Image (cartoon, rainbow, N blue to C red; front, side):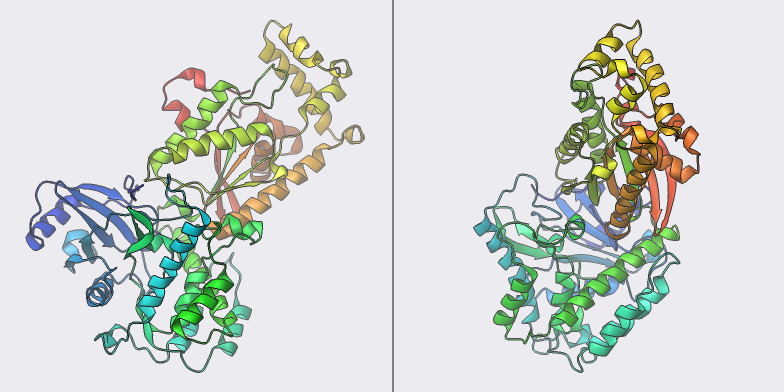
Amino acid sequence: MIDRPGRVRAGEEIDIARVDAYLKQHTTGLTGTPEVQQFAGGASNLTYLLAYPERDLILRRPPFGHKAKSAHDMLREARVMQALRPVYPYVPQITAICDDTEVLGCDFFVMERIRGLIARQDLPAGLVLDAAQTRRLCLSVIDRLIELHSIDPAAAGLNELGRGEGYVRRQIEGWSERYRQARTPDAADFETVMAWLAERMPAHETAIRVVHNDFRFDNVILDPDDPMTVIGVLDWEMATLGDPLMDLGNSLAYWVQADDDPTFLALRRQPTHLPGMLTRAEVVAYYGERTGLTVDHFDFYLVYGLFRLAVIVQQIYFRYAQGQTTNPQFAGFGKVRHGQASFGADDYDRLSPLGVQQARLLGQWWARLGAAPGAVMRGSLRRHRETADACLDALRGQGDATPPAPDLIEDAGFDEFDHHEVLVRHAPELAAPGALARHIAAQADPQRAFQRLFVAAVARWADGAHDADYREPWPVFKARCLGALGRAQALCRHGGPVVVFTSGGPIGVLAQHLLGIPDRRAFDLHWVLLNAGITRIDCRGERLTLHSLNGVPHLELAGDPGLITYR
């Protein structure tokens, strides 16, 4: 369950020979050549493991590409950590700070690794807590934030960490300006939100304390022997002196609770939905009771936290749109056709053993890439569910380096059309139970015979002359699929990459829509779609682009032609 990294993402490699030479000049006791891996995340600064034979170190560097003026200051982050560690022992020990850009082309620092567990979207694989234990974990995390906010900057000699007074105004004005600078043509202007915050911000800070500015579950390290205990706190790049209630508002922007609406739950990034976790209101009340600070008008701080998070997401998206990051989590979503169903059987909707294998190979391939979806959707059919379950089970089962997959959102808009109805309206003699299966089984080439029959049946369904014969005519099916596409697009805009497990019909409709293909040619795409094939759609605000259709690298890499199937 120990948090482990994965392979380095393409385009984010570091020159380990130069780093190794530098560290051996500035850090004692290092021998050999380190193995380099990269930790999941990396939406802001990038984090690498340098595994020496006798010691693990962590390297932090800024992202590739242009950055905001005051963001990603690696030297400042390292010096903040050095200053805080004597009074807040959860800060990792800094071992080297490099301002020589000849080494990596940027400033960076290296720190000791704290080996432990990290709760990302879910608890680490294999860690099961009951409600009482989960509550203890929740309070432990909140208490570490309260402990940070209890530090007196003057008494601890930390007055140089920030300007303190005027913090609230600087934050509202600063984040508003950052949003305007990072806004892309497809993003909302947020002027109403920014005006609301400016009108309601308090005249003075509630107190001046050390604030972390990104305090959440995936930035704390849990003791492997007592997972309810915090042993480390990470990611100090935005730490400063400021208003502690602003810091709490930042943390609660990520706090998705069990009774939130399904869309918000789909964007969850930490396990705050579990039984035993405090609600946002309970966190605020507990914090106020423990600190003595007044929290009666916390709506301002919560709206600020949500707005600030929206700005951060927009800044990341702006870098992606400008081609300044290669991290695939920043945009796009994929449609996965279900694995091979039980062709010719009484229950076609059940995955065949080959279909399960195809789905598992996809999950294993994603795990090797270090990929994880931000949200998962699927149709309501059995073959969608079984494909998603097999794929995500394989994804989660490939080691701790891969974050657990999120909960699934079932959306019947991604269901296939009723094949049986379409067929029997064309060939009424096949309407009796088992008639179709018997007819197909009697053919010399059952699959080709089925395709010929199906082509004719679909042509009748889609020609517009017989709409009254069908419970779901072609135009209604098409509208249903496009409605589901819109819901997936909304998730993508607000929560990163989305994976949808669906069928060939909806995938064909969506590809037809994005390519501008007329209805009469829509099913030309359907016939070539492979089982467990991936269709990738790039999402940039309101604009969707078909990136690739029908990819099966996970099946091709297996080297078995028998894995490539169409029905």
